[in-house]
Length: 114
Ligand code: 5GP
Image 1 (cartoon, protein in one colour):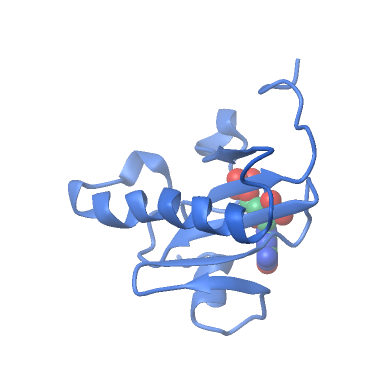
Image 2 (image 1 turned 135 degrees about the vertical axis):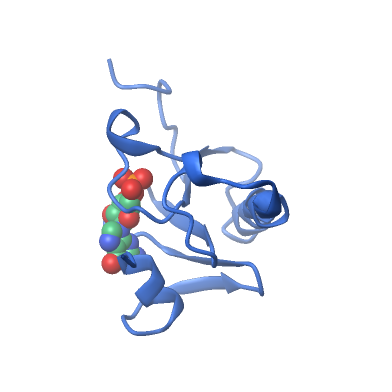
């Protein structure tokens, strides 16, 4: 079943899109956890990191390239930022279309909640 992110790709629901190419789409998170909180997703519907295939290598590499470009355009590259991909329950994944969070704009503290 398609997730909400498939609907964003198809422009069936609105999103604040900051980047798009043939493989990936990036848009601002609806509930930002930091001054900059952008989601970067492959256009192919991959539910979780567990379903990644070798054929996805280019799209997933693109996620990091695009994250770095967006970090620069958002003015957070030098201070730094965090890239996160959550997987399944223990990872805290809520939307089952693989996505990378780009978070920054303030010091993000320790990597994991205690
Ligand atoms: P996850 O917990 O799956 O790694 O992260 C899902 C993220 O998607 C959350 O940060 C949540 O705020 C965001 N999100 C959920 N629904 C929507 C939506 O409809 N639009 C946007 N822009 N973000 C969403």
